[in-house]
Image (cartoon, rainbow, N blue to C red; front, top):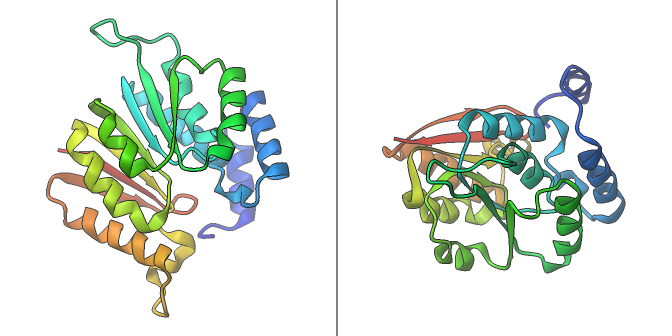
Length: 218
């Protein structure tokens, strides 16, 4: 972890608390999931909600749903909104593990977002080409070895001025380690290096939580 637990606790104490739905989702995730730390959590969730509020996106793509925390945060500002053409705004979220569908749908329903969020289960590399959308915002939080592949696949469909946010871009600080690297570290480094060289975008890597790469398409 880049920032100490004490500092993170202080930040959470001085930030708007999570909703009751998100609190219960956090609790159930911690009780039922093998790797509950994959949850976005209160600080990052609030950040995602604010970004969605600021950008007012019409079409959002999330790659990696887990139990649905980040999807709820990204989609909450979309409730009741329509595009200039009168179309309903939507978030498409993709989760590889079908066993997560029950908990995802349960909390999307409780958050009143079932009509806004479209859940897809399966391989994101197979599903993304079938989604005929131009994305205003993409949130990437899936398998790390394929980060660069996801990026290459989605960027052409991101509108000019649209954003890609990629979680875990520092991977517990391992991106700067000089020792042996595993496939996750190698995937994150490949992604970070590719984005840095990509003249189609401007980007900033934030040391926020486990690292957040923000990319704006020119």
